[in-house]
Image 1 (spheres, rainbow, N blue to C red):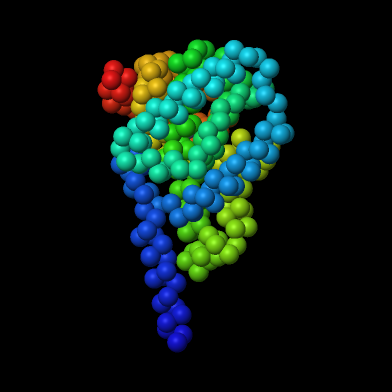
Image 2: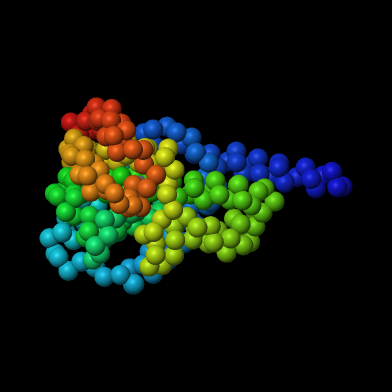
Length: 268
Ligand SMILES: [Zn+2]
């Protein structure tokens, strides 16, 4: 009996692992996402609402409209691509929103389920609509590639182990919630994210270029944008969405390498 009890949890973990391996669109990278999407989205939407209540929308109409227009264009492009490639169900439950908030922080993020927030502080660096599409494409890529779920899954497996897995996922949603706070922060602090890992950051760069190109924005402007970011970051702590990126030089070189792929979609 003792033997059986010891044997069961790994088996259980294995079965969960086996059914939750997913593949990232376009890059084809395999990832392990064990948090049910419904749970990810319900926590995301709740935290997003709290953030929006605690923060102020920009009163500047043109820029707010620009954020919504880019978001809408990228959303449509992503949905079209996923539908054409029989992956539309991956976007089930999404409730897209694109808002510009008043803040001097050079920041932007996208929470699971398509909740995109841009801070007014980043606009001097994005300069124009295509420049901002670089940032929003990158952030939307993190969400669409389910990087948050992947990070939480990694933490869950490392910290809690197999025994606690079923509890965290089912009977104890509090554990999922606590994990969430570790990954995404809480309420008004939600923009202060723990870093994505470097694989995810590079993947978001690559997908972001493709998504902006699909939406009709020239991905070549990404190089100028990241050069401005590099100049801006000299001697300062990088913002959330840059924190674990490869060095600016490596990143710009990687972007140059990824441009031909994105240009296929831009010219389509
Ligand atoms: Zn990022």
